Image (cartoon, rainbow, N blue to C red):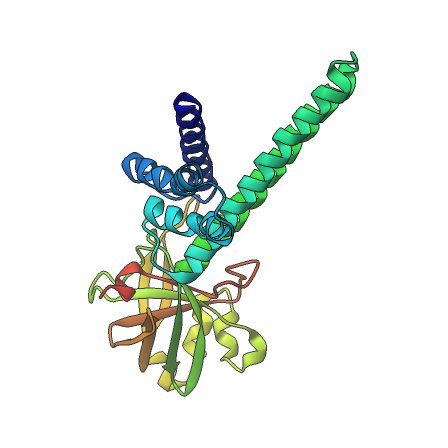
Length: 282
């Protein structure tokens, strides 16, 4: 009986470790093997309780349901409630998916493989493989979207009486800045119907000379170069005020320059501004 109990505990431990590993991979979370093994060991507590005291009704069921919360917390060091709930639901999804697939394999083997109907078994295996492929792609897409959203912050600024606000993406690859003053430059998306000066939408930079005086006196020319394009001057403007909100805290700066574009920066409109990383440094 002792060997039987040890086998159950080890199987539960190994299954929890594997499920946590898959959860971490699909969620793009960093994996630390000691924490993952510790979380898997915690996951065996309901099994120990069941083997020691037998079925204990509501207590055992409650522990079985809430134990993944502690396992996820230990394995991935998650502190935010929203992130914790999301990871726990992902874990449960993988548990149910894996259990369903194993049950399906058992049923297919019992009903068809023993009877020699291997074509149906093969069809089932291919279907599971295709399902896993599309599920993995969907989870990767969701995770990419979550990462993009987590890297955006609220931004607002005023310039010559015009107010602009939206979400800005913190782009670590954005090195655009004034080489003289070292002020960073943010790229902001604007629309013609928002009553911005028409010259801002012209491709010829000479049209910017026709801006009102209060605009032209704020122009700062920035040398820029893009891939497969020659160096050119980019018109940026000194803002009257520039504010970003980092973790709910307001941060104002007088070192901001902005340049404008009418091109769509994000297809899903998750951000309409590209920020220099120094603009959000504490």
